Length: 129
Image (cartoon, rainbow, N blue to C red; front, side, top):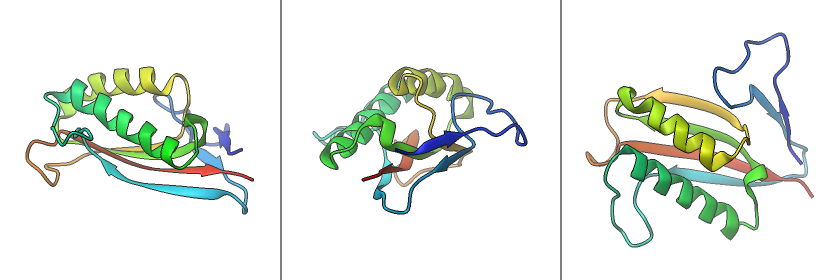
């Protein structure tokens, strides 16, 4: 199982994430492509909250398909085009991750691949054994 660390020699995380993750050499890895607010039905969800919910639905579906669980999610990178909506993203993220704190990076970008995309999250999961 990955070990999530926040050593006292680095800044305390500003929200619920870990500064580092230790993964054993024999771990099975899942690299998640950037997930956007489009469901399996091909429909782009409307608004930041709905798109963020869909992004996490997609991430959880990928974890399940790889026979992994939320606790195996070790890193996420969030790309957002609307900095004023960061509180919405953080609320959805906190609720959906339920206290799980993977390593995390958050970037504000001018645009994503489709003008309708408001958020994109990529990540990595690892399961030892």
